[in-house]
Structure formats: structure tokens, C-alpha cells
Amino acid sequence: MLLVLLGCFAVCLALAVGILRWSAGQNTVLQHGSPEYEIEVPQGYEDLRVEHPAQSSGTDQPASPAPATAPSDSQPAPSPAQSTTSPARPPARERMVTGQPPVLIFVIDDAGYRLDQLEKFLKLPFPLTIAVLPRVTYSAESAVRITNAGKELILHQPMQALGGKNPGEGAVLLSMDDETIRATVDFNLASLGYPRGMNNHMGSAVTLDRRAMTAVLQLAKQYGMYYLDSLTAPHTVTADLSAALGVPCMERDVFLDNQGDRESILSAIEEGKRLARSRGVSVMIGHIWTNELAATLMEVYPQLVEEGYSLATISQFMQMQAGEHSDHAGSGN
Image 1: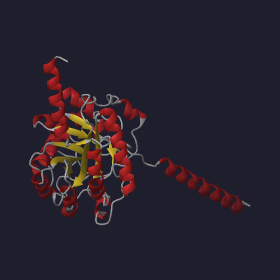
Image 2 (image 1 turned 90 degrees about the vertical axis):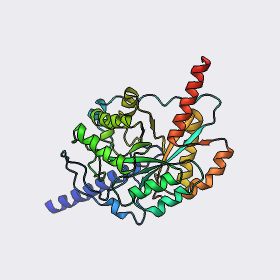
Image 3 (image 1 turned 120 degrees about the vertical axis):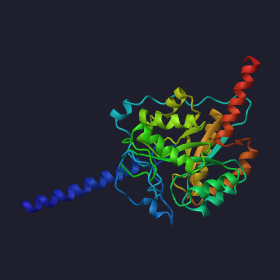
Image 4 (image 1 turned 60 degrees about the vertical axis):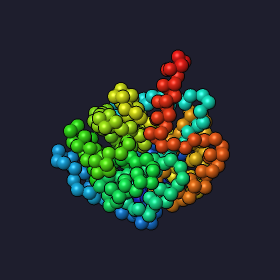
């Protein structure tokens, strides 16, 4: 009798676990702009999925280059206790001056591993911002090629994530003191020839932390750079701190390749267009190793121009904004 009861209990437990797993799967359908996301790495990038022990901190100078791990930041959302320590995000960015065409900004993350993937984006005939990971095989060469192709180069700065995944070599960790954070990021910036700006690779833990982000943003201000918040977690402190420190800052609106197929990319672009029409601008982030992305962007480019959208890099848009504010100040409006 006992064996029968135990058998029934095991069957019920298995069924319950199965139901919970199914329910979790239904709740993890990713929408465009989801703050936490998971992207399947295509063939040739399997090494990015290798798990490593958590990095140690210490105050030594940044270590020599080594491969990074997963390019996504699919960590759980912050607990209520964590969220209450960070102020709510400020309202959406100010709309552009009426009468200007809506602006689309395409940002391509994770350059530095393979030059063949990079070349597809360098051939695109419109402004593009490309973020290069530091201390990987082709970081320096990618930076040179991006600049020579007339695209905008930024640092894709690895940062600690909530779930403990290793964001890669040269990462900002919460265990670091301010001096170590600045030395780490400064080393990465120098390795790319001090680009126009930076954004976070992973970073759902660091972008919630005022102390760590202050150290990063102070360095951006020192070099006259902008910061792009990839928004890998809600309630980040980046926009608030950037405003306080006087650092030009923008935020990601849409992830282009949550799934990576052509139809989902087109759907994400439509969402970006909608946001640009309502806000004046939208920032859309994709990844250099998504097979369909470069071809899909080339496909839709003529249509975007025909529909009246303006394509720009982040710094170009910031210059446009600065000029518009200056014109209005001069006219007394």
C-alpha cells in the first residue's frame, strides 16, 4: 500500500512540475522592447554560451583580453527590495521640434568577434552606430574598420548582470571600487581609440546601482562622450544620473532581434517607426551575429526614406537636437 501511495505521489509531482514549466514558458514570450531578453546564438558563436565562474574583483589593472560569455542579459527582474533602492525612470525623452521628420537610430551590438559579420553592416548605405566589445579577438580591428567605413563607433561595455552570468573580460562589477571601475572602463575605451560613446553589454545589476554608474558616467563626462542605456533591466538609474552629471544620454526603445527571423525583425522595425512618429525618435538595437538582420535593414531602407523617416547615428541626432534648441533660444520661443 505504501508503495502505491508513493507511486501516486511521484506521478502527481511530475504532473505539477510539468504544468509549472509549461506555464513559465507561456509567460516568457518576449515582446519588442522587453527589458530582459534571450537570443539564440547562431552557429559559430557557441563559445559565447560557455559558463564561467564569477569573476573576482580586486584592484589590479584590467586583465589581458579573453573571450566573453553570453551576449544576452536574460536575468530575472529585480526584486521589490532592489527596485525600491533605485528611482523610477524619468518620462520618455522630449519630442523633437514639430515639423522635423521622425528619426530612426539603428545600433548594432556585439562587434569584435568576427569580421565577416561586421562587413555586412559596414556596407549598409545609411548612418549606423556599432558597439564593439572590448578585449576580444577583433576588437581593435573592428574599431578601425567601423571608423574607416564612416559608421559611428561606441564601446559595448560589459557589466554585471543580476543572475550571476559572467559578462566577459573587462566588465564593471559591483564588487569593484570606484577607482577600479574607472580604470577598467578607461582601459576599454583606450583600446578602441576613445570612441564617441558607450552602452552596456548585459548590466542589469550595475545599471541599477547609483555608485557604480556614477563612476562610469563621470568617465564619460571626462571624455565628452554620450551614454546609451541598453535598458536590460527596468528602473535603471542611468538617465537620472546622466541628467544630474550633464552627460548626454539616450535609451533603447526596441530590440530588433529577440527572435532573429525576418518577420520578427520587420515587426520590431514597425514598432520603432510607431515610437518615432509619437516621440520624434526611436533607438533600435540589434546584434551583429543575427543572420537576417543586415539584409532586412537593407531591404526596408528605401521604404523608410520614402515614408519620410530620417536615419541618424546617436551623435548626429544629439547634434540635431542641440541645433534645434539653439534656434528656438535665439528666436525667443
